[in-house]
Image (cartoon, rainbow, N blue to C red; front, side):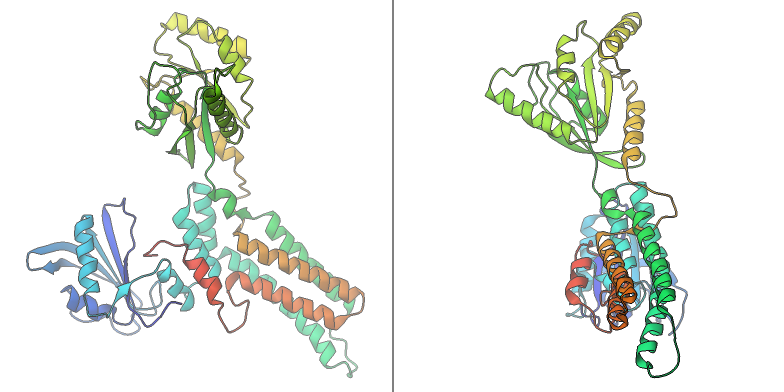
Length: 470
């Protein structure tokens, strides 16, 4: 488990960023920075000072190397982790960053490299955030679309904590009244009658069910959608893949059957990212076992994709083979495109496009991988189709992870069981089930389910998913 008395360091910025952020936290943070790096910290921030301090100056790495740096100093407990924190911001390269971190680690064992998720784990253990907010940090890190990011930001803002706090209060209120009636059964006092308790708990059950029904599933937003490119051999699929990805991912050749395997690449769109893939050109009839295997792999990949871009070469006059191949493709969403639209003249293009649309009974979008014609329109269309398939409820919805959903489901089962026991006159069993429901709701925000101890295995599993430096 994490040792809170250690001082830790890690690079906390993405490798793609121009500005590098090195984060340090722990009891010896200020002393290590002052001595180990000759940082311009003349005096530490005063105890209890809530506002961070910004220092600018030259950072000395050795006798021959100094770099400009900005230092953000945060005094405990007014920091992200709850401990003293220094963030060093520099515009530099990987080699200098490694030298910077190396200088810090050379301080005679006074500081060590942070484990994945350890900064956020300290924030949780020091009471700066609850467990649901800690998980939200990871969801923000791995977000691949704006909806996942928005859901994670709501989770980090404590929207789920607000909801569960209200539910906990109602459960505790009802439980205390039932148990008071049990403890003082000899008194001529009825703290809560069974019908009233059933009504209160039915309302709680309805709220829990609404929480599940109206929630954003983080897991459903995390998985990247797949977009496949299909068509006959030499229909311009590989050229289109390269154009959309902005790099030479697939071999382009006039020779048929150049692509045998399924080639993939990460395709960033306006509102989300997806996996774009190009597979072997489909055939109306396979010539040999190799073609047959490639065809089976292609059809299976296309069947499981969210959107298929179907390519037909507009530069050729006939598309009988393309029509036969189109019948093999049965995707969720199909976007027909007429490739190589730069090759025919304007008049011929218009005539062929009309025939193509009439033959297939679908509206083809003329595109050119060579000139880039309609490529942006194609990207926008795919983006719109993928966003339309995402399970995104209203903007005010609360984001739930799989762990949250298990806890809410468990709470619903226990409250429902408690209602049944109350109706049967078994108040003691009903109280026991309410205790279990209360613990399940508490578990959303705390690994301990409302008890004093901390389940170390749950914590380690959650925070080990994070990047180092977070």
